[in-house]
Length: 126
Image (cartoon, rainbow, N blue to C red; front, side, top):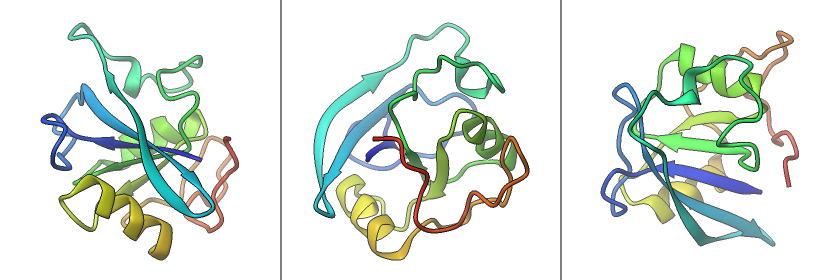
């Protein structure tokens, strides 16, 4: 499973505040997360909020974690099968570890087909 953590400075989890551009990518194997890369999106209008805009920059991502996120953002992500969760810690790796232990935090029970996207386990996306 690949998890994207919003991080403008690549050191701390940051809020969405409109249009996030930078993310640290983590993969989990045997329940352990490790960093696999970084994603920096262009400054031009971002497709992150484009409901149903698939293919999407997060096509390989199962979860996106940020300091905060709106229900509209969660809905947009759900349209492409990505779960949105609120970070429980400002340090990205710790936020991912806590997510893996506690499950999604502060997410919304919405999806493209009206299904409960806050359930555990997550939708399988690799």
